[in-house]
Image (cartoon, one colour):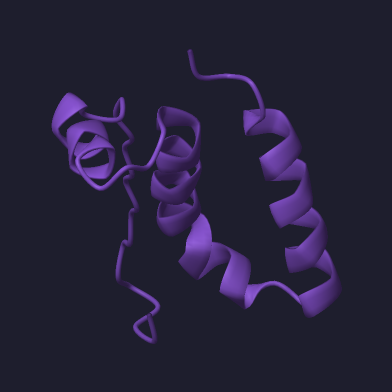
Length: 72
């Protein structure tokens, strides 16, 4: 914001992955673990794309490890 007198705020929220989202993937033969990874990956993609390449690759790997085995 270029106006020094302006007051800028930011708000964000997250929610649980919806059953309808998982159902969509299940209907296409994708198991829950891969579905959750795809949904979270899509949510984070824009942020990861702003990171330098080496950091983005490491963040993707860490996220995959963190998600491994969390569904079920």
